[in-house]
Length: 220
Image (cartoon, rainbow, N blue to C red; front, side, top):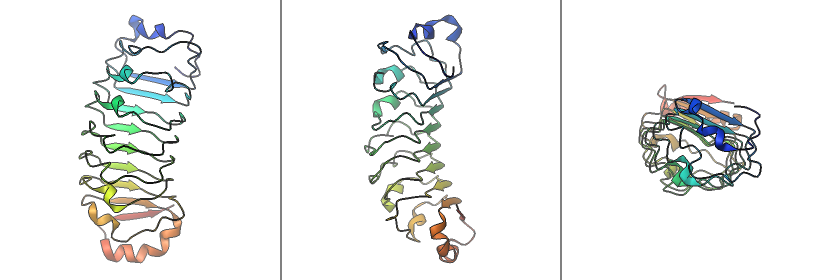
C-alpha cells in the first residue's frame, strides 16, 4: 500500500492479509487512530516489511506490535525521522537478515541494540546523526556481511570488534574530522570491498601496500 491514509487499522485484520509475505507503508498517516499492540497480529507470515516516510507512525506504535514477526527476514525503515531505536523491536525477529535504518536522525545506538539479531547479514545505518558509535555495538552481529555507516560522524576501530564475516563496508562521506587510519581494516579478516570518499584517494598507495589485492577500495 502506497500513499494511503489509514482511517482505521482494522483493515489489517481482514482475512486477505493473513498469508501476506511482503507489505509496504509509504507516506502513511495514522490520523487520530490510536495504534494498538496487536496492530500486526494477523501478519505473522510476513517475510518483508517496509515502513517509509511515515513520520508520525513510530511516535504512536507500541514496541510489542512487532512481536509477531518471527518469520521476518527483511525490515526496511528509512526516512521516518527516527531519533531513537527501541531494542525491543527486534527481540522476536530471530530470522532477520536485512535491516535498513537509513536516512533518519538516530544519534546513538545502545550496546544491546542488536543483541538479538545474530543472523543479520546486511545493516544500513547511513545518513543518520551518530556523533560516536560505541565500542562493541556490533559485537553480536557475528554473521554480518554488509555494513553501511556512510554519511555519519566519528568512528573508532573498536566498533568493528566481532565482525569477522564482514565482506563489504561503506564509510564514505564521514565527518570532516574523520581521519582514516591505514590499519583500520586489519580487524576485519573477511573484508573484500570498502567504499571511501574521494578525500582519501591520496591514500590509495598506502592502502594497496598494506592490503594488496585482498581488499578492493572504491572512492566516490
